[in-house]
Length: 196
Image 1 (cartoon, rainbow, N blue to C red):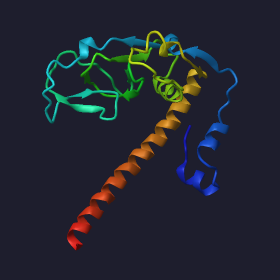
Image 2 (tube, rainbow, N blue to C red):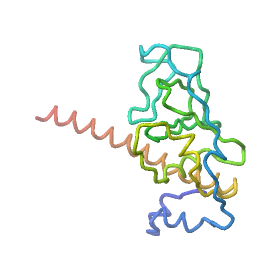
Image 3 (spheres, rainbow, N blue to C red):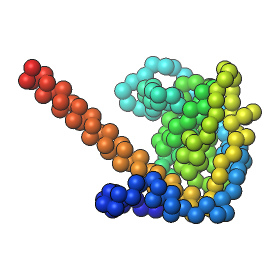
Image 4 (tube, rainbow, N blue to C red):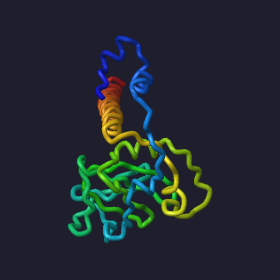
């Protein structure tokens, strides 16, 4: 599903509403996350030494920091790519990150999630998970006993692919705008330093 940026602006269509109107929700099914996602314990992928370097394999956490640093360790690397992404799920805070590159983790407090079958688009599931309302009330692991039992609605694989592609397109635009903002903030800072 293409999101023609200029066309949406020209018509004043409101973006998300026009995309949502194009989605046929007939035939969508409710599924439990644990029925569509396999989880993997992080133990084989935990970094041995928290002595980070400037290059190497990223060491991740699902939280705000995301990339804690890089390691030169070559064993126990979790493989991921844009064709085979993974979800890094914080088992205590229920924060998730979609990962599309090889990585290691620092903590055992995460689960690494992947689709059980090719009938599900992991990007779609990731975005659907982000909409779930789940209140963390105590310090315990949540995936197995609670979060995996939550339900999302899923359409056909073809529709999952279309929706995920549309959201990915928006994310690409957001990233480009964030980079542009950072560039202009640097220009402003340099200008202020030069002129004042």
